Image (cartoon, rainbow, N blue to C red; front, side):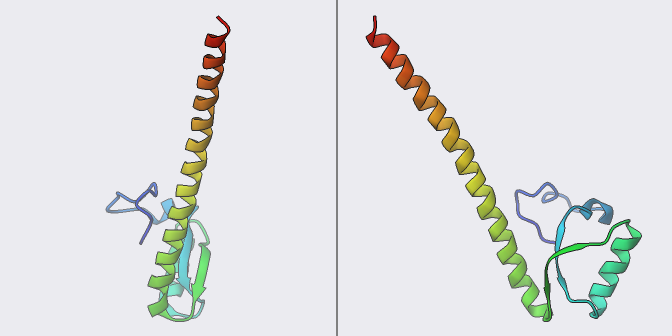
Length: 105
């Protein structure tokens, strides 16, 4: 299993399959033996896996998985920038209003 370093399960050595219930998977299309096993064990764990991507070639899954992880990191970075941008706006706004108040005295 591969996840971004910021993922909630990133630092674990072992994970119960049931903990992946809300996650999206990069998987082979139905009909491949490994996909059938994955579906079987996920169903035993109480869920049907949701796939973010399904591929025909096992060799391409690693590259697609890396693309998805990088895209997730990018989205996380954008959200972080937006968060800090708003915080910085508030700080600047407070400083500007306090300087205006100082000039009135």
